[in-house]
Image 1 (cartoon, rainbow, N blue to C red):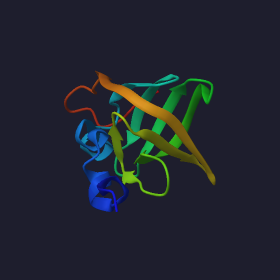
Image 2 (image 1 turned 60 degrees about the vertical axis):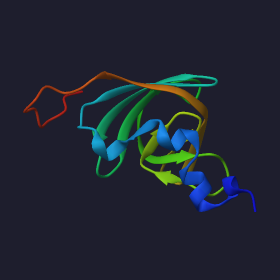
Image 3 (image 1 turned 120 degrees about the vertical axis):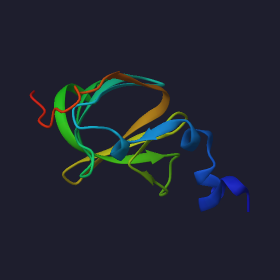
Length: 121
């Protein structure tokens, strides 16, 4: 079986190496994610519960709170809470699953000031 189709192979995908874990970010961190077809602005609301506010592309013309599930290469494997280049973002709103085109870049636009514990929107 080709390594790419195994769980170990998925973990070694380039997108799994170049990226970041949502739980490693502070609430209030703002990310810019550029995919093959769109650009998104992602505000981390609760990294532990994986809650984010996302805006951008045709999927999110207005800001909406979603649960950030993780990164996928397609199919049923998901790297939970991960944002990685070369992989697709997967988010959910209620029972609806939303998958983007492949991520080209992820940059941190801003981080909350040291000592701030509340996010003001």
